[in-house]
Image (cartoon, each protein chain N blue to C red):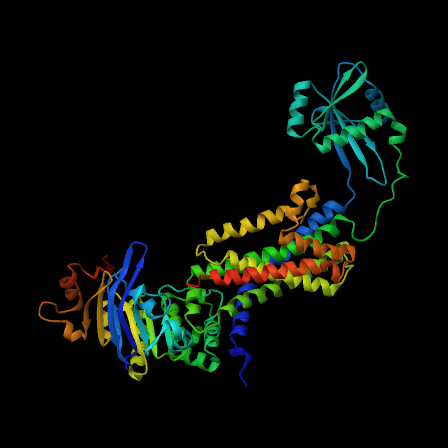
Length: 246
Length: 369
């Protein structure tokens, strides 16, 4: 059985067609990257999979269940980190994790495990407002992992981070991959992130899937890396000098 | 047995309380400021002060007033001009001082416009003529006192009024009127900002969206906000009451049980309104505008600082429908009139019903994402 099935979904906001007929299916344990520039429809697609937005048409099933009828069950099996969530600045890391842990009826034992997993032991009593960008992202990942999710959604988890903090986060995600218990859907516009973490890459632009497959299957003589592939597919670069090109 | 620490309502309450008390501004505006206001206004309106009136004389010929001034006034020199002070002592009503200075008509009118003078006196056939804005109560009082003095100086200068019996009953002073009003106003203000603004801020930070992406029970989040505000309001009101008791000897004359129930109903009403106000918007600027739009009319109309019975007759029926009026009148009647359960059952029920309805409608409209 597939962990996630996305069947021909569409979503518009006023006169913007954000998602225009996307379909794919993800197997248990797969690490999948949704790759595309800003405005490609990645976040909208992921938020529909997370049950935070409803598609205008089409269907999304998680473990064969739809959001409409099984919201309570599905909320407890997924973990997620949203783009730009700001946790309360005047709470400590420990207090924030305890709060989110209580939503899953988890206690301090699990909170301490997460603090260890994310390498935040020395900062656990620090207020969120005093944390660096990398530490905040590790906290966001920690909150996402609290309930040991079967499906994990990470929306641009390393955007805006320095290379060192990005590597720290990748290390945690690689540990997770080795455990083979979690299915990961990650949106990014960093080629390296998709290449180093994911088994499968889905390239999205203007609300449609351009390519879907394993990295080695996507590349050929004309497209020796993801940058070249993206240019060949769309005629534009995914990023230029570190900046995203729309 | 499952630990209470794993309970989401407990954790939501605890973290919300921590967030509240970790903001020093909250403690100042919620606890210190109302006490300072009540002390300031209480002292301003309970101390017996001297009444001072400035009178400008624009006279061509001497009047009867001048002959009285020659007898009773003391001459002084201030800022390059000659002035005469006429002081009338009165143990019951407080002392009155008239300050007379001489000037020409144009300068006198400018002083009147600037509020430096209360009355301008000219002469006509040996009689004093008084010029002032009849709508200005200070000027009117100056005229009435001064003309009475001129007519019968001896009786007007008696130091005691035997026909006045000062009321020293509890509950009739201005401070007795003010403290229940401040408690009700503090409750509304603390909830409107504490609940509405917190919700809108969390929504704009996408924290609400992050929270509803978990199995959190949505109503628990709102209940936690309400419980924290009730706790803070109890503490704030007790501090205010304690200082009012200490400094002004304020007492609760009515039923304390009824007061507690009415207080809780007020909390429920304003929490419901706050949730309704904050149910849709993601912008804190819009939120501030909405909160002010709800608060300001009630602050001005509901009789917090001064009685709403001074407003036109037709508006009083409408003012009485405002939740802050119902709460203030109810608390005031328990404090000052010795009211019990029966007298406050109506406002208590109305406020509770309003709270439940607003809460339900707010939850329906609520935008979590």
